[in-house]
Amino acid sequence: MFTYFMPTKLIAGENAVIENAQELIIGTKAVIITGSTSGKRSGALGDVTAVLTENSIPYLVYDRIENNPSIECTVEAAKAAREFGADFIIGIGGGSPLDAAKAVAVYTANEPIDGSDFEMMDIYKGSYKNKPLPMVAIPTTAGTGSETTPYSILTLHSIHNKKSFSSPDVFYKTAFLDGRYTVELPLQIARNTAVDAMCHLLEGFTNKRSTPASDYIALEGLRVIGSNLDILRNGNPTVEACTELLWGATLGGMVIAQTGTTIVHSMGYPLTYYKNIPHGMANGLLLGEYIALAHKEMPWKTDLYLEALEMDSIDDIQQLLKEILPCDVKFTEEEISEWTKTTIQSKNVAVCPFDVTRDLEIEIYKKCLL
Image (cartoon, rainbow, N blue to C red):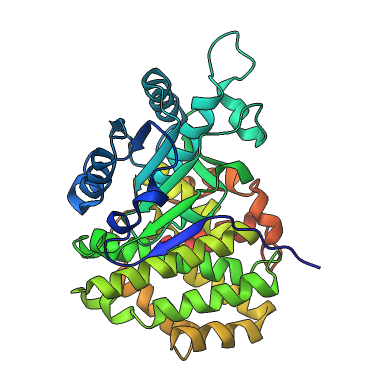
């Protein structure tokens, strides 16, 4: 027995926002959650504000979302949204703004103030007295898949790490996938985010929680990425190819919405927090060793995903990752030992296809980083 739930409506293609204004406007006053540059540079912010203005919808642009947003950042954004009187949220950007928008939706509806019934850390309960504000998403990178997941990953400085919350109430109502917003991305950012999507697909496919539905979606997502590997190697994408990669990333989100991720993600978080390595790259540095270990437990799945990626062996994937993820950051055994004290406690340890111990995590780190 298995279930499948993904309530987000997807609209893909050029000018998706402009030509589907009725799907963007889901309230009477909007707050736009985005980063300082990505929304403007991509053209997505301009399209959104043009639609809102044309339809006389008041809006507030909150563009102070940081990379790897802290929980405090989302509380501040929610305060601005409440003061403005927003009743729906538009998330524009990569994983950071799209994840942050989900937290803002919760906090705007459930004000975290001293003496209130809702405190800041209550967001991790996943069930809220007041429904989060409804949201629409416009991704400007092809990687996170946040537009189709119930997860939001926030930085908690109190634990020196990231921590995700999950609730079916923070699925986006609609997501717009338009390759025009990603075609001008710097090549390394496009690579990092595509590798994040690949991680979602492979981690979900090899996950103990995988289902026939999630496996079907994962293989389709891997086929999409596999057919665009030359772009990740050499750049020069077309708008059509960028829309395809956005679709592949969205499929990755649809997969992990059902399965969750594995230790690739939990072990990647310290690389981002302590070493400032971009999230997708951090995961990609560990992915090759993970799939080698997973292969020993489920070689039949290896055959399926290699065919989807149009590759002959795990070595080919590992070589691709080395080629497109150049990293000269130095690591020490002391750092690795310290990180595994936290990473071994992650919930996704239990869903890996092989038994995970702290010693094994140390071994994986050493093989991949030293």
